[in-house]
Length: 503
Image (tube, rainbow, N blue to C red):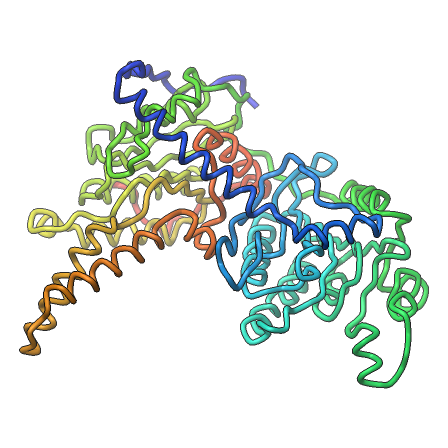
């Protein structure tokens, strides 16, 4: 590891004491307040009665812990889901090793899986597996939420497939059975490499005592049917019995300590250095109204180590910034939209830069501030389709890790409204029908409102289109954690078949 970056230091050129910058900062207050309120909503772990019952059993509730939570807003304001989709998940260090942590929320519907739960779990396993992270699951689940079985059973099976594939690929997983785990909840520890049961509390069975009585007439207590001692002495499912939940967590830490991590040295890693300008400046630089432009180069100076950047083709296609830098000591290539449209030259430059990053085995951070590719005669004649396709191809064929920070939606609701209005009018004209202006405007307004709602970050995150929402001031820290994770196996770009990087 070297002690500093050789990239040139860039000086900020803006005086943030100006009226507009102060207005920007003030405009972020209600947005961040809403964000904090939303975080509280998705952190709810069941009603008061369920929480109290859980505590009386002597069981632990989720405690705050320093880790990067993933998909926290899954199912947010979704009537068919629960806060966080009944799963808490994230990345954190255990015994100094990055691990993926997955926990059921037993105080909400008994930890049952609803339609959003399975989608969230499947995404979490994808992240854990592709980044070679050991998986620790805190299991206490009633299995499938039966009222939603039609939308849960088929996709829910992906978890079992993923656990089996992880084991076959040598990617370890540990399940700590904290409480009653039924049906699919029982298969989770059974398909894990290592299992820990809490004594007189952890249970696993395909059918609980009520179902057993109904199916066979047998009357049996849960502990006798599938408790920790049963699985430790008779079935062999339990590898360890813990005296309580604290002991179970300690045993899982001992398991992590025994693992041989296949980490690769990160080429170009340097000693991290804080940016020369405070991250708080981001609230002044960026207008809360995403329709208003801002200087992306100034944003980068608040994110990268020592505010040092080496820019690729600064005078060509200037609406996209392509540059090399370090973030938390990790070498990165950065692709950042300077304004909201991509012209042919920007597309060609970005495609070339992505190919070079693959040649250099450098991960790429994308800062998306774009509404789409440019349209019109000038753009078409300049080859926007061809150049745009080159960019799409470069991104698709790239093998280095990609980390995306989305700053705005792809298409504004006003543009969508105008396009929809034109299509409706053209369709009516082609059919020889008279179109009522009042009816048209009502349809357009409904469409606009829906598009506006669906474009919000809370809606996309609720639907698991992205992996979460962050405070802008946490961007550098989040990128640092992500870069550490994606670099664990070493970064390897695509082979030479990506082609020459020359434009």
